[in-house]
Image (cartoon, rainbow, N blue to C red; front, top):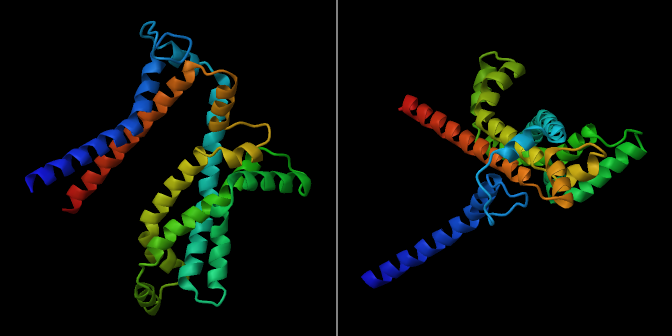
Length: 267
């Protein structure tokens, strides 16, 4: 009995070791390369510790312009996708009609459509029929077509647990539809709305396929990185990756700290 338990623990340990190695070894190698003075992004030969690549990254005006475009597109997508997702979620959870399943399928279908198709169709439609050339605006519309579906599904999972008797009680007490929505419905959906905002931002900021075909001659950060990697792999790209890793870790620490503080206050 003990031998079987020990074998099971060894198997679990090996699996976890391989899993974390698969996840984190590339990040570790990439971080080491960012501090290597070698012009070629390799760990060996090691030519000394340097911060040169971070300085080179800071001087790259194209990178800063692409980063600004990424933030502009991401915040715009959040502003469009979350309200659309909220409307779709309320429509499908509050109203009962015969075509409900059909409408649900239509609203979810952009998720199943390849990003390349969404990008090309968005660009061709606005360029050919509306005479609007590809740019940040078309990239925002192209991303919003499928990101709003993600937001809708996320909000729906929360809205389905809502007790409608709370709204009915508020109406009985003389509340208007606006008051009920802002003071009862929206506060209940707040966690899902915040999560959908975060999801929409990350999906937009990291998007490549749809944006590449919809944005025209403009660049976002993923497109800028992809262009750089096709022409020449510079260690400055590893430095950029290290910066984003640090920001991600910092964000996780701040989130966990705030979550624990709220738990302590609630207790």
